[in-house]
Length: 142
Length: 96
Image (cartoon, rainbow over all chains, first blue to last red; front, side):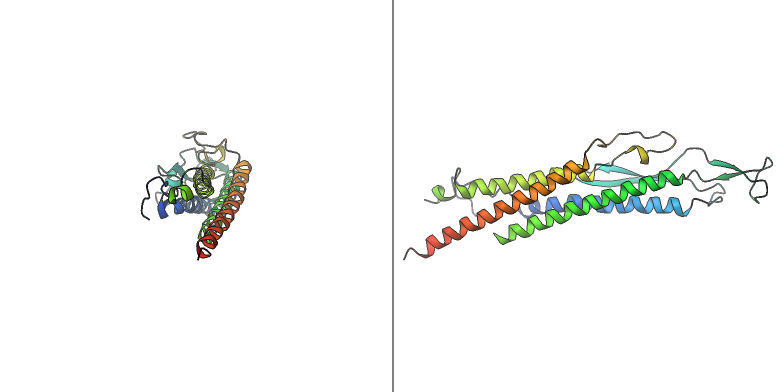
């Protein structure tokens, strides 16, 4: 669009500016899906007493990070270094000489709480995406 | 002539600025919602490595209400702008 002296430039910031409100909730959808995968892995391995290195499964945490240009992303997945749970079960094949079995440091309550938050955040981002999409559709009607 | 029609202070420019502000507002709200659960207490590492370091104090309901409000305002502005352009087209078309 040609610049006309005295007439302000289009304030939308071009097509990129129009699409930015879509890219931010999209990043949220991607990030919370990844976080949900991490939670699913934790729950799936809640009884895994022998991992690849011989120790029980360690809980994984998706570390969320704010993107510089807006939005959110999973910066990485880190292992929770808290102590393994110990359960007294002398008959278990993996029990030590005192009868204790080392279990993964996964707490189902924490995982379910995380899962609920993640689900709600995914829904919130989906709502924003839908709203931004409708706004763009309206803009095309002008 | 064109400046008088589209320049500062005209209904077209006011509405266009309104649309732009709504888009900007939507971007900010979307960013706040996307980062609302960053570093929340439930997700913190159980070993205490990470605490509440994100924007956990964001009220999600308030932000979603803002989304609804912005969407409605944007709808109204696009409708007004469309009608204003229609009037202008009619005026241009009926001059001869």
